[in-house]
Structure formats: C-alpha cells, structure tokens
Image (cartoon, rainbow, N blue to C red):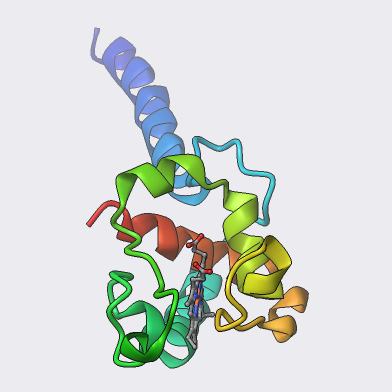
Length: 135
Ligand code: HEC
C-alpha cells in the first residue's frame, strides 16, 4: 500500500515544481516569443534598471524618478492595469532597445543599442516592467 502512495505522489510533486519554474519565466502565460531568461539575466536587469531607468521611471516603475519632473510627456505609471493589458511584450522590448521614437513615442525615452546583443536581459527588463504592474 505504502509503495503505491509514494509512486503517485512523486510525479505529482515533480509536475508542480516544473510548473512553478516555467511559470516564472513567461510573463504572458508562456506564450511570449521573446528570449528565455535566467537568474543571471534577471540580476543584470535589476542592476541596469537602477543605473539606467530608475532616474526617470522611478525605483518601482511609478514614473516618479527624480528626472521625471523635467520630462514632457512623463513616463507612465507601470502600475496602470489598463496599460499593462493593452501593451504586448514585444512592444515593451522594442522601446527598451530602440527607444521611444521607434514606436512613435518621445525621444526622451532613450534607446539602449548595446542591449541588442542581450535579448534575455531585455526580456528580464520587460519582466520587471510587468512586475511593477502587480505591486
Ligand atoms: C531620460 C529619461 C528616461 C530614461 C533614462 C528611460 N526612460 Fe523609458 N521612458 C521615458 C519617457 C519620457 C517615456 C514615455 C514616452 C512617451 O510616452 O512618449 C518612456 C517610455 C518607456 C516605455 C514605454 C512605456 C509606454 O508608455 O508605452 C518603456 C517600456 C520604457 N520607457 C522602459 C525603460 C527602461 C527599461 C529604461 C532603462 C533601460 C528606460 N525606459 C529609461 C523616459 C526614460
């Protein structure tokens, strides 16, 4: 009897664990066409966000960084659920790499051409933008 219980429990535990791991990466239910993100990519993205993005977008993506006051238009609040629903992962990543002008937005949203070579870091930055919507 005992043996049967263990045999059924182990695969279930494995499935749950695998589900959790893949669930973290997706952002949009695993449908994202963008790069696979590792822990190292996420760490690099966190560092980059602090050094390159927070000045305008704010530490928690509220559009309230110290540099935001001088901007017109201002960076939006990523906590805006309506915006999170309408924007695609691809659009977010395109703005980050190619800048605001690439998508008809403000040139004050600067391009980050060096990140073209790091799609997974860009994807991790996009994950951060998404996570600010859940705060
Ligand atoms: C000099 C200020 C500044 C910096 C630095 C900056 N941004 Fe922006 N960003 C803006 C502004 C302003 C907008 C809004 C542009 C508009 O609405 O026309 C914007 C828009 C965006 C958008 C599109 C949001 C939308 O409204 O559709 C994303 C995504 C984004 N920024 C991510 C980033 C990331 C990630 C970084 C760091 C790598 C970064 N930005 C650095 C000013 C900045």
